[in-house]
Image (cartoon, rainbow, N blue to C red; front, side):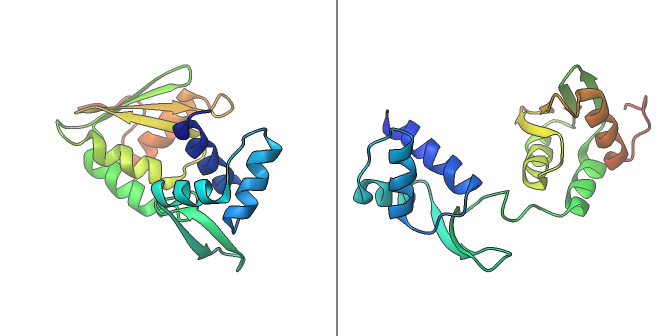
Length: 159
């Protein structure tokens, strides 16, 4: 396993579970067949940008400094960004294409990623287009309808 793969797995573990020490991570990695010393894991934690916090239940835990799962942006923020910048929304199967004016797609994609909105697996932003991948269960058409509602667009409205 490469350093990048190990660090990615560490990120997944601290995102999913309450882990408060590097020693706990060493044990979890060992359980998965990944050999790493506590010193290596401590360096990995520093390199991927983690911090120790108390979560909403009062548990001490290690999280990524910019972890969207710990502090999702309010839905109002997403509604403002989409209302301001989204000009059209189209879907196909589990894909949603969101169009913005040139140079604005990254603003919408960032708001989407930080919103932790149900049904959104992730997004990729270009200059004026955001490709959003919907979960199979949620589906692209339903997610597109959600986006149109948030953006204040009618179902068939485009600019």
